[in-house]
Length: 445
Image (cartoon, rainbow, N blue to C red; front, side, top):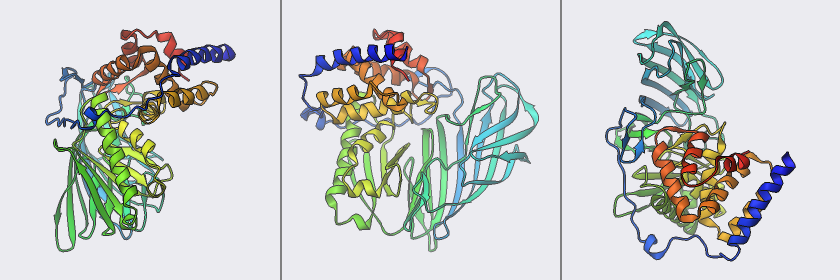
């Protein structure tokens, strides 16, 4: 059966490759497009219904609002905080437990539920709260967590160097439950609102999801951020050894690069990062929908994975900057602002809905048609899940044609935005554009 599958896929790819072998133009913005200024969408009051508003489906009726106060001691890499959130039981069952996604370097020291202390258990990456009484469907709880932790010198999404501390996936967040409420899923989160205040020594600055307003004191500074309908809140605390460069559109969409002063001599590398980010933002603004954020922060840190994308902020590794190798990673990271942040998915169980799509969109933006086809021909013989998930969207594009594929992407995005998409959702939209469900299932890993 596996050999039959390979032969079928190879035949499809050969046909597609031949059909586009004479197309050698690069997928670059046209002059008209290069001068286009993206619109800004700012949602002031998130809907709590399942209705469609401006073509956007708020697929989850529960939109958590997190209120977070943090104190950070950069010299000792120490963090302490208090988080408050209202939990709503969206399952169909009475609940005796509530779960949070909590990173390893955060220690929960106290929990209050409706102003009463609660028993809890903390595992490697989760927190389980034990409720005194069953919580009925649609019942609510006011939950407060007290926590602390030390940030390691590490090249991970939560890490530190001599000049900065960065926090991606750091904030404890409510875990989604299965429909019957029996178990949590730590790989997906609700689109949520965040109101955050971060206190640091006065000689440190902060870049964060949603942008930051700072008030300087003699010894300490207070940095406030307000982010709406995002799936995570990420931020970086930077020493005085950081500078900034930026680009802004006439409509107010800003791209801000925060970099270590050691990079001052390599202006071409810094400008290349900004230009790549700006071009990608304009491209996806046209291709999918207006930018979900009116400000995108790019921050130089030390990362083993090269680049990590979070809502409204992207961590960029120093090595990528120095080697001038940011374009592909940057384009993919910016695509994740739409597919991954606004449109959520279970990236562990169904990687083709996030990784596969954003990887394909990055390759499609950077490569010529012939280069892209050659790249996909190399994938067809492999069994790598991530590679084959990229192949899926290449085949969809070739089957539909570029213009129809763009309409498909827009329809898929608009229907699932701010919700959690599944493979069934993707297939349902693809079938409306003439794609057979069995073709998608044949290609999926």
